[in-house]
Image (cartoon, rainbow, N blue to C red):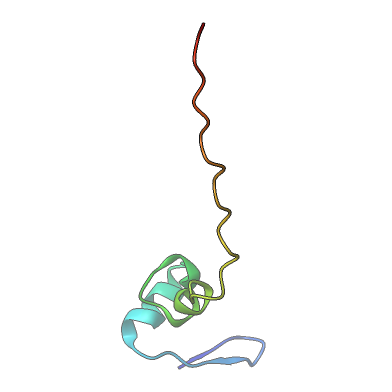
Length: 60
């Protein structure tokens, strides 16, 4: 738990998270953080476009 000067309280899951916050690191840049996981959450993907069949040309 970290209490800022303005009175906001930050809760951390562990000392690793708290130390990284004190060092000024952003949680969304690390794969193991909950913030990063929520940003990388798989969602519905747009349907893939089918490629047009290749036409063969003959040189005369």
